[in-house]
Picture 1: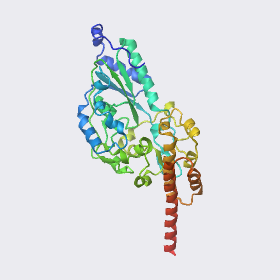
Picture 2: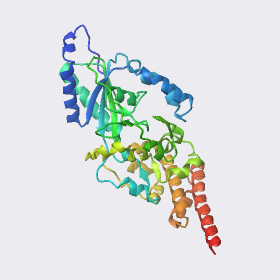
Picture 3: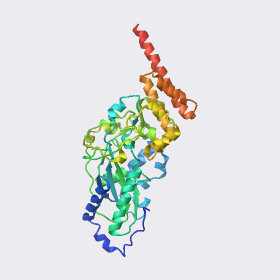
Length: 382
């Protein structure tokens, strides 16, 4: 249970004396012992972010993620989401796995599929939730029962703003949180609590005039400083939406089949990011450099078995095949005579769903178009 009864302030006035700066340092020590890389504290006032979010919604940048609009401004009002909340304890956990295939090698080989580095191991929601729950239990053991709730990329919680206000980092131009010592390869989590704590100060942004992330984005999804049009973002296209992937964006996706890390890979601050040896984030089933044909031939049972306990499973087998079909089409666009890719696509045609068929037909058409182009070049050269 992650919401024990709140402390009665009349009966527990002495506890206020314990919730001081020294106690926050104790929390930091506990956080490190539990596997977090940083802990900070902020208040619940996120009103400064509300107008920007409302404008983002008004422009339709959320795409088919209707739940973002449905929750309204609650994500900026922690005390409305969890009544009684007075402080938010934020945590950072680095995840960049060691001993995995280099992203540049995978992205440069069209026969392979690229999976965002955060998703190669165990589902981070489960990892961080478990550790935050243990932190709450330590607090309970020290001060007695209190009201709290754990969040890890769940419910209407504006994690970026909470991380910024608490000093864990600043919002980069790609909209991710950046930290001078850790770059952006980390997860965030929150513990809402019903007692006061000294708050940490925000840090100064350090992106300056750099626009490397905006320039590298394959689909030009970063439309302004800190503003992403999700409808163009490869992470949204491969993970969040069940719709057909727009044809105009398919070629730009390359071989990215689950998420996209380009804006992180190019960010200068990620020179300071450290890899972790955490077994939870170690790549599973060779998904750091998987062959596209093998992935496309997985049946649903294999998909579920290979992705058990991983974040990848949430997209389901049908989206998985859709994404891989697009990547196979992009492979055929540069290697139109790749018979194995054409055979794998043809074997699925008409066997799964009309939606998948549309992506397979597009992929096969890339082979035909590339072959025609090659023939035209050959003829013009004679």
